[in-house]
Image (cartoon, rainbow, N blue to C red; front, side):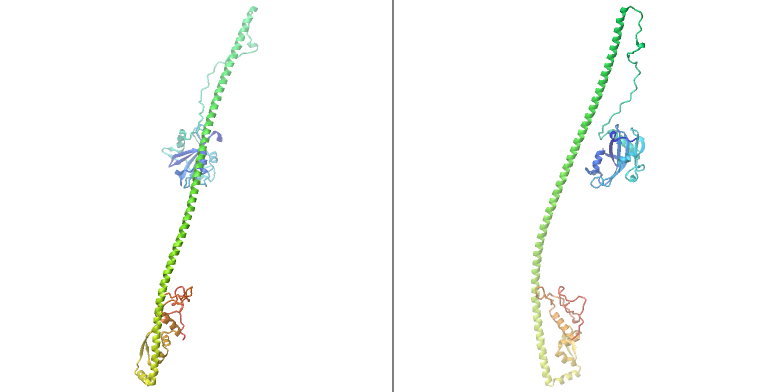
Length: 449
């Protein structure tokens, strides 16, 4: 037969390394399930526990051995759900621990399908089994459970002679011997005394019953008063716990507000630091740009001077060529042709150094062409067109970028000089990385005149 919860107590015991480490009322365990108070000593572990149903004499009448997983903060994991009361009601009958055969639910004896993995079995060791540990701990009554001692069994009282009770009827009437009429009053007086004695005995018994009833009533009132006091103590403890929870909640709220304030202040500081860093970087960039502009201007001036020198040199060479041509005409007019014919007969050749072609050997038959159009002659020897040779020659004389900047000014960034006309690509080698006009992989093969 199932026992009513009104006549029993419920408790939960926790084991740690096969020893009982903590015990609590079931109401406290429910508060633990509601994440009201954590158990830091069990954080991140799976703990063996026992749910016990006790009778008024603290004898175990129901037992469930179950597992409790705790998270890293010491709270019971939210996924935990073990129907303890359902398990104990359907448990298997075990040994008598003082309150009759105990109902037990373990992993090997689980009455609810699917709950086996959440239970554990009774452990037997040389020091005793799990039931012995629980029964010994219950004798200490550390939870302060009210125990109602069972009244001692006493032997029934010995049979006593029944009290004299008045009897009525013919059989109870006194038998009178024949006597004078004067003797009758004495017999009537004795009968009255007997009745009075019986009435006095009945009154005494009623007084005793009333006194016993009053004692029982006083005892009951005293028990009620004690229960009320304990209830008041529990209410006070509940109020203290609620106050502590409110204080903790207030402290957590204050910590949250402080953390939010610090986060806002940190964000503000970060924005200020970012703005200051931007200003500093902007100043450094402007200084670097100004310095680079000065360097570029100096390089441009240097390149301009080199270009002027090259143009002056080119002008001198052009003048020299013109003079040579005039000398040729003059020599031809004075019989120079016969002189060149004689040189040709002797296989005399001229050697001239030209940019891009190096030292060129000029046969006598090509001397006139070389003198009339030197650039065309050299371009042909280099295997490129005259226009290509001229662009290369300009690059060779002044290897700077021919592109223009955003302001319309020439870029004039120094470039690597290409030494051979055949390897030069216009728009690529005479441009910096920013102003290149053709892909790096393209080459110029234009050899048209």
